[in-house]
Length: 401
Ligand code: NAD
Image 1 (cartoon, rainbow, N blue to C red):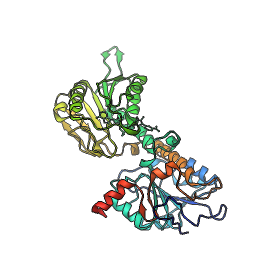
Image 2 (cartoon, rainbow, N blue to C red):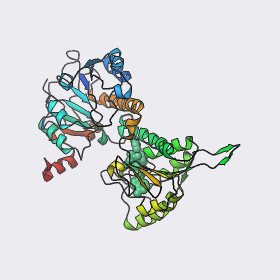
Image 3 (tube, protein in one colour):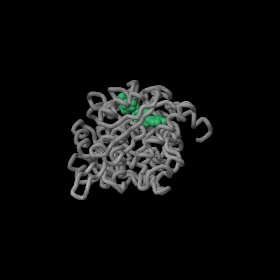
Image 4 (cartoon, helix red, strand yellow):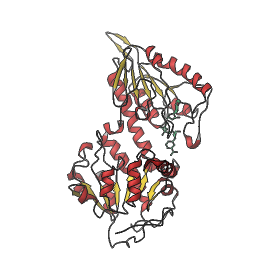
């Protein structure tokens, strides 16, 4: 089935099958990135897709690392197949967690719809190949953060998983108890946990550290975050700055604001036993909030979990994927924290995808014939030989591919 739309128009594939003539084939590969344990769909969601009349194909062992064995998918009505070739051939939609690799794109039939995280400004090689192979790709990073799209917000679901793991990782590497204890062997003071950046991941880290009994402090440049922090029972560190930018995200601070921020943050970092940093500005390098001089003022045994490690790090000493020890402080730069709770992060991701797929089908279960829906339009990355997401198109025009 060849599916092409007009170049530059948000039209879905011509030749959409009439309902009932051919079920839409949804394929789910086994993720191949190092350390990736998640899977793009789970048996519970497969059952719903099959009930809606679609055919679901799963690559052998796709869910094994997330503790969803093949047998559960089969019981839910999916067909388990061996190898990419068998999986992709004749597939209408392919669901990914990590962006498809160049090799995967080479195997996708022309006109296939790929949905998943696409790393839309960095994964340029694969994006240009998808353009050349006339793949239609939707990037979950581009789903607008509007109320109607909340159920499809995979950035939030995975940040929730990441924030939880960061707090547990901090507790696990801290040489102290987190809760206050009154015992026959004396009274133990609670540990202090500082969260820098109180977005989705930060709020989950706050909630988790509070449940473990720590004293929790948090800071964010967006003043609106203060109310959410306080509602979780944590202390919000106030600075006379409000850097709320467009769409609820933070804007970059001015040079003067950065100095003020540094002073306040450094004092809080010095008194913390665990620091969890989550500060990010979309599309830019993460802001440095903890300098190497500040690390030198920390207590021996203190732990930093830098959730921004992959985008440059919030701590100057962070190395992505590594643990660095300086001045008796452990600085952990974890990568892909959601993959460490693969059962639930996959479940949440699969439900996000199920909701997103709802936009791609008509009531009768056929593929929609246009991508005019606000959410589809915003998240469309590549379609019919055109890179439709302008920042990626501009980068490609800049001479990369
Ligand atoms: P993010 O991952 O881009 O950033 C994490 C946090 O870092 C943000 O809260 C940001 O303000 C903060 N930050 C940036 N620079 C900082 C600095 N210099 N110092 C301290 N903190 C800094 O953000 P996110 O968690 O994905 O979401 C951010 C916002 O989007 C929040 O307001 C959230 O409530 C909102 N949101 C809305 C929806 C929706 O309406 N559907 C869904 C998800 C998130």
